[in-house]
Image 1 (cartoon, rainbow, N blue to C red):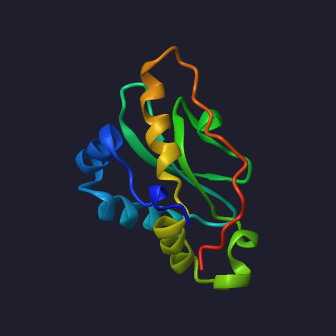
Image 2 (image 1 turned 30 degrees about the vertical axis):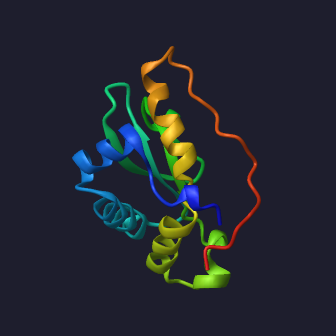
Image 3 (image 1 turned 90 degrees about the vertical axis):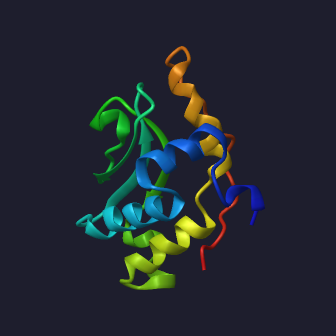
Length: 134
């Protein structure tokens, strides 16, 4: 795994600390949001035009664009096909492993300032090769 993906930096890190009390607080909130989500969908870390961070979950094909006016920083798949082989029905363990090993903080850190610019979202390079969280 790319070591640069392990933690956010700069203004995003400061905003996470301000909003969630730090990376551990964000992890706890994201895991809680994902575990509490019924059925298939996604859990997102988003930022709005005021630079306010927010966690949301969406069902099926929902996304921050259809659910409100926000820019996605991170997204985690909550559909069982994303984790069932490795984690069975332990969504909590999957979310914790995803947060610790697969969250792309490089992309999120670079995406965060885009909300202040012309309204055009930055697109992170991709696709990235699949990496197992386990």
